Length: 151
Image (cartoon, rainbow, N blue to C red):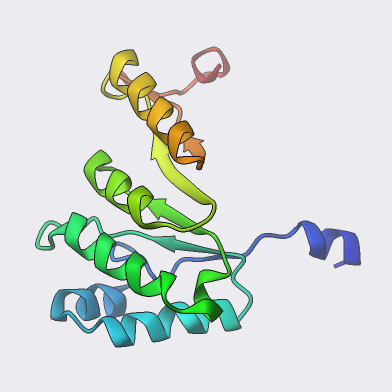
């Protein structure tokens, strides 16, 4: 990989995601946030440019888990130096995360699944918090499956 390509490469640490890591999910469920922080620290030490944090698990209080974990990350300078991607399908968890993040955040994601009104409301709030956003190509009828529906 050329130096220019390496500079453009963004490595997103996904191990702090309860839907993608059984180990992280177990630690969060047990309330072992010290071990959760160790996972985040390891991701950063191994080159993560962004930390993806997801607390979407039916048996968890996702708002409380997101708030607790992001507040702990904020207190760790070696982890807090990288942006956080707040990854959730639940707006209340996303907003809880946005209230905690210090610095630039990325919201992953919002869509038109609930209609234009809720989408615009969420987009305005993301803008108010100063975060970047991933917008999924979904609307009330499902995932966009043609080029015209994606625009």
